[in-house]
Length: 194
Figure (spheres, rainbow, N blue to C red):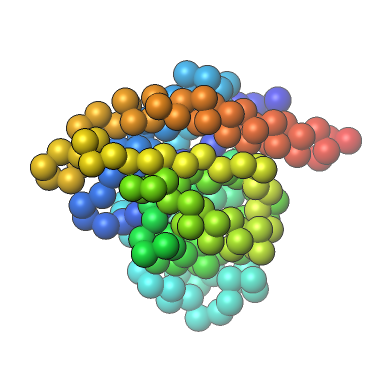
C-alpha cells in the first residue's frame, strides 16, 4: 500500500453504563499487534450525534450540520471500519442506527466487519446490522465475530473486570476479521490503481 491504511473501530453503544468501549479498546489493541494499519476508535458516545436532524436525505450528499460533516469526514477518512455492537432486545442500539443513517456515500464499498457481543454473543444484533450494512453498500467480510460475555466477566458496577481477557478468548476471530478487512482495503486500492 502507498500509505498506512486506517481502520476505525466503531463503538456501537452510547449508553452511560456499557462495556462496548472496553471491548473496542481491547479489540483495537489486538488488531494493532497484528495488522500494519492505523487503528482508531470512533466512540458514538463521544461523537454525540443528536437524533437525525439533517433536513435532507443522506443520499443527496448535502449535509447541513457541522456534526454531520465531522462524522462524514471521520468515516470518509477511514479505509475500513469494524463495528462493535451489543445486542439490545434482539437488535443493535439506536445510537448505531442513527449514526449509520446520518451519512450515505461515505459508507459505499467501505471494507467492514461486525463484532457483536452479549450474554449469548449478540447474533441477532449482528444479523440485523449486516442486513442494513449490505443494503447501503458496505463491503462486508463474509463472517462476523461474536463475543459471549459471561456473568463472571462483569464487576459489580457492570463494567468488565478484564476486557483484554474477554477479547483474548476470541483473538483468532478478531485477527481473522482484521486480516479480511485489510485484504479488502488492499484489493480496493489495487483496483483503483489499475
